[in-house]
Image (cartoon, rainbow, N blue to C red; front, side, top):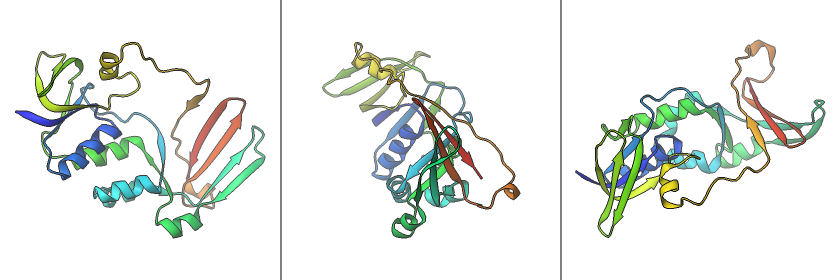
Length: 212
């Protein structure tokens, strides 16, 4: 079977692209290198445009219970002194959802559930592909060949597809580092039920903490 689109990578970008294409009637195959989708990553902060996009794909109803609507953000210095504060509730009233947070794994699970059966194949690490005037042939590590009209690279910062297409292009370190973590905090210790995001900024290091 020849697919309209082959997507390298079963992360957020690859899965979202697959759902959007399938809703337009295209035949899609998603190839993910890992053998199982594990709960990796931490909290994601997404804006109104992301929520509207997910709503158009009819995903927000399943995702809503896993999300936290942000009402305000505070930026503190390394000693905990307030630098600035933004009232997001006003934007929520204007846009419906202006800013929300969700664990990456929860978003990924929701996306997988909206794929057509058989779309996602795990353990399919791409080692090579070839292009022609009529399409593309993808060669996974297990020896299979998969044909499609087009190949979409959504296989992350260490993209195999990018390395094949642009072998001399490498990601450049910007000088910044970000650590992410998820911490369970008893609700009774906080006045706010909703998630609050606190960014502690010092030198070139930004730490983002999510608290309930």
